[in-house]
Image 1 (cartoon, rainbow, N blue to C red):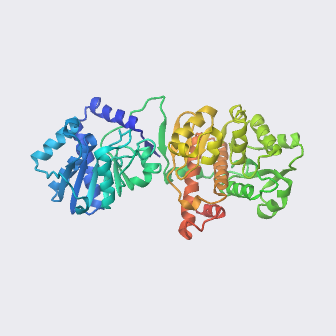
Image 2 (cartoon, rainbow, N blue to C red):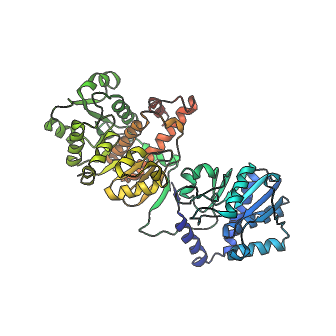
Image 3 (tube, rainbow, N blue to C red):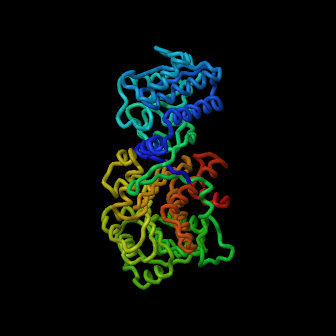
Length: 497
């Protein structure tokens, strides 16, 4: 599991390394520049290199990288794009050293003449739109179509959100320092960053207790969530009550139920509309059924016995939003003592009556896509996508729930401030029923973790489920192509875990 840092956390960590650990700024800049030079030598054509440098320490890193490359015999030069009166102390030092080493300074660069451009205009501290001469330089770099190596983050990308601040450099690769930054993983920043490599330059993270902490799970982190007790039985792997499937919609209920089984759950009881009996008996005979008829009163006795049996509840896929579905969601949230995962139509019902979630008697996990999140919060989709981590975290804290906000880069956030950004997956997941499969996997892993007594936080389990779901999409696409994959193919890929 990798920790990410925001712009403010990086600034604080950098200041601590210099001020408290007494690491000279020049040493840190030299290490950063060496990492950039290594990236260019190993993965690009260093025949002719131009470092395009701004006025801050990021520009100083670029100047130092050009000097190092020049010392190795490469044709490297610098273009100083900013006002010398605004140079940081680190930048002043590097320009002076470069002058002493007779590093060429280009006044009016023709970018197409170079084989590699080092983007060192702006670092992680940029917070306002790029304008004026800097915007012109960035546009010229992009128009040259020359491979670009960005220093720390592509100039013009917001460090925390990945937003484009007016205009931004489209890098072939980015060398970031000490930690990955959220803006390198979140779109559109993830697209502009190219291949991201993280260089250890000697900076340790400095965090306050109150602030959010950002993480990214790696494939190796799945192991504890997929481990099986060799002495376990069907009861010890979790019993899930799935409240899903309306009179008209059975497919979502089948998909989430089979996914929960295939991800390792021991037992499933499906609470569904009477018309779904036959599809379940044919397609998933392993599931037990508790049936009701839409429009008729729900049996309190059946609900009580089903809930008492369960270790976890999943409610929503294909459930509908009619009176019976509303009654079912309200009853489960007010009576359950075990965790409840809320997906799809359950979220649409909560959007109408938010108090159902706010006053839930049990721990909850919600799994909205941007459209559902827009309905839940009253915020437009475009605005939500400008800061997915912020939206997920705000919702998690307001409703004291784990929020899994699904998108091309899904975010899982907890009320305590842990935020996980997922980087697995591909467009194969953009298919009907994919979210139902995720809901089943998530419920299965949560139930198994609950029964194992391992004590993994729910947000960690949610992040693991999202990572696994993305990997299933990648594996399925490798067998055919991204457009060919159906939700059922994701379930079939679970044979690989």
